[in-house]
Amino acid sequence: MTTPQPVAVVGGGIGGLSVALALGRVGAHTTVYEQSPQFEELGAGIGLGPNAVRRLDAWGLGQSLREIACVPDALLVRDAEDGRVLGRLPMADAFVSRHGAQYLTVHRADLHQLLLKSLQQQGTAALKLNHGLSALTQAPTGVQLTFDNGEQVDSVQALIGADGLHSRVRGVVCGEQAPVPSGHWAYRTLLPMQAVPLAWRQSQMGMWLGSGLHVVHYPVRGGESLNLVVLVEAKDDATTAGWDVARTAAQTDEDLQAATHACCPALQALLEASAHWRAWCLFDRPPVPSAAHLVRGSVALAGDAAHPMLPYLAQGAGMAIEDADCLAHQWQIPHASTAQRLQMYAQARWQRVAKVQQRARRNGRIFHADGGWRMARNLAMALGGAKLMDMPWLYGA
Ligand SMILES: Cc1cc2nc3c(=O)[nH]c(=O)nc-3n(C[C@H](O)[C@H](O)[C@H](O)COP(=O)(O)OP(=O)(O)OC[C@H]3O[C@@H](n4cnc5c(N)ncnc54)[C@H](O)[C@@H]3O)c2cc1C
Image 1 (tube, rainbow, N blue to C red):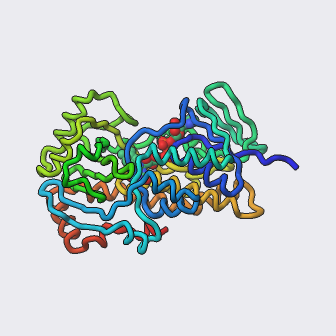
Image 2 (cartoon, rainbow, N blue to C red):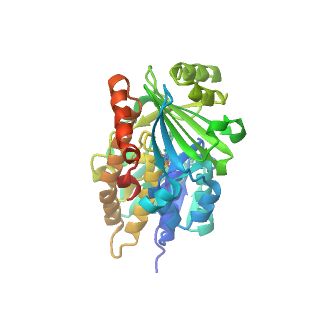
Image 3 (cartoon, rainbow, N blue to C red):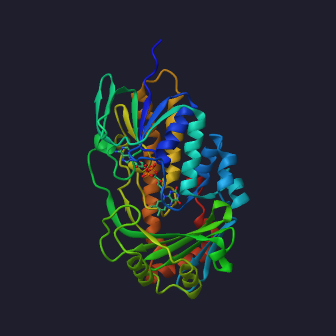
């Protein structure tokens, strides 16, 4: 009997590790190739919708996930300029009864560590650091990979590109196109809870909607810290990806102060509680237009490589987890070739992720509305309340 060729996963972020973990659970052996010298995640908090939490629970991570997460009681939406409460959406148990799972908030690094540890315990993946993919070709015998450390790998059964926003694998699947700079910036900070003004030391998610900006905050790390993010439409063209772009701390503070000068005193006081902000320029891509944009032959895309999105639905990692779950589902179908499985994966995923990308962009326009649009939004929130904030189509799937 010949040993099955392993599946190669390029990228060891939340997406790549989720793919390796989910495939391993259904008996597929993977090799994860990560370009960095260590597996690590930067960044701050992320929200995990019930759609993601339900899948992580099914992978057996439920208990350890809750040890690192917080369960917000509610989402409170306010107008950033006058501080008025626009709506309150009960979460926690209400989400369990409506969507079958909780909404959790976690630190991105904690989730990444949890996935890594679980994968190591599962023992179904080889993990290779310092392996930046530089080229790949598809041959009838399988996919051949070349890495920038000079190593070559022949004949892997399938390759999943989970190599993020600037994916190299993407070029092979659907041609090179640069991601789109949105002109929006995320300013993020993590505050020790004892430094947070008393009014905001709650087990709640807060969202403040302003003209050309919005602010989100929620507890992470079991309530030890508050994740605080200000999302701003910048005046200049944003072209730099990643954390700690070439701006001094003083410039970052200056930009942030200029952007938030019209916010109400309560919000200003919360923002002033942190002196350590970092700026992140936001990119996305147009919504996935067809299944063919997710797969070619034995090569498929997952996570941000496939469908990077603005964080205005808080679903980038959630969609990567759904991708992984869907891939594992296809791997269980008997008598299918690898190419057929990847085709079925792409067919099952493309419309869903395209809708999420589209809605994330639309949320940006609603959250940042100005003038008459702002008044119309606030009126709609007053009339529609919590119903407008809930998303059964997203959370229930
Ligand atoms: C401000 C902000 C807030 C967010 N909030 C949320 C939220 O609340 N909820 C949510 O679900 N999502 C959120 N997201 C989105 C989420 O963080 C991402 O969608 C998710 O982390 C993407 O994971 P990934 O593994 O696909 O990509 P990445 O995290 O980019 O990982 C890609 C990995 O591939 C590696 N790599 C790249 N190129 C190569 C190569 N050639 N060879 C080998 N390895 C390579 C990289 O080093 C990296 O480790 C947010 C994003 C931002 C910017």
